Length: 271
Ligand SMILES: NC(=O)c1ccc[n+]([C@@H]2O[C@H](COP(=O)([O-])OP(=O)(O)OC[C@H]3O[C@@H](n4cnc5c(N)ncnc54)[C@H](OP(=O)(O)O)[C@@H]3O)[C@@H](O)[C@H]2O)c1
Image (cartoon, rainbow, N blue to C red; front, side, top):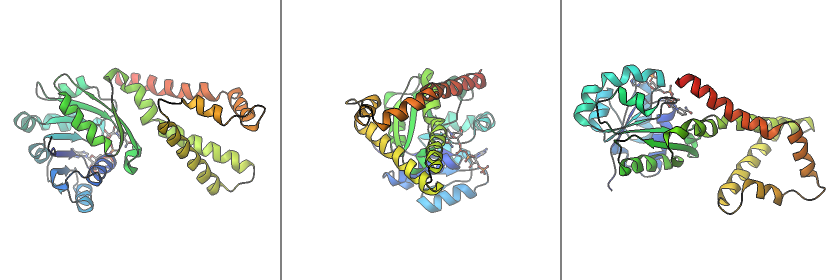
């Protein structure tokens, strides 16, 4: 399959991360166009990466086989109906990264029969370490979903999921970085309490989280996280004493409650 022409409506944080990642991964810059409301962000992105900034959202649609909607969710209701004519003529695949906007609602703003792929990216895409989930509607072909998976794999990992699972995915991958930042800070505060300066404590904690996560990913299918815990927990030792103390303070249930909290709020907002 040849390189597909991608267009981005919106040139903010997420569009910037994805475009930079795609270009770094070898997607030809001359096969990508971007537009933004005020233009400056699109121009800056074009200057940095060699992609083309175009004046209007209509221009993006006309130039692209895959149109990525990278505007805030509440903006979609005005942006999409305005593009109806251009979309009906060019008939691109529409890719939405808007949080909390189901495929059915997106389709209601689009010409009948439009292939739509919903993606939930995460903030770590900006350093090429993202985790994204992808779900296509009934008009999106396998090959089209694969093109979108490939694009998001250029800025990290990407998996295909049934749309009903996107809320749980969003709790782990979308909101999870916030909990992880809190975890790193809490670990560092623990070290601070025992006399290590905060900046050094944060560096130690972050590198520990990074390495532990890499180990989990490298051993996927061979060892569970719990197996890895067992390898560093000696009988009667210090680590098990710490783990038991954390469980007494509600560590695992509080993490599961975090996921519940995000999923419940997502349901409230989507209702
Ligand atoms: N950031 C994340 O971690 C994350 C994670 C998952 C999903 N998402 C989703 O990603 C989407 C974009 O988020 P973001 O963080 O990238 O937002 P952002 O940085 O605010 O970017 C939004 C961009 O949209 C542009 N825009 C606004 N109205 C427009 C219009 N009518 N036509 C064309 N462009 C327009 C803005 O331009 P101006 O600056 O000129 O107003 C801005 O460049 C959202 O739907 C969000 O739910 C983000």
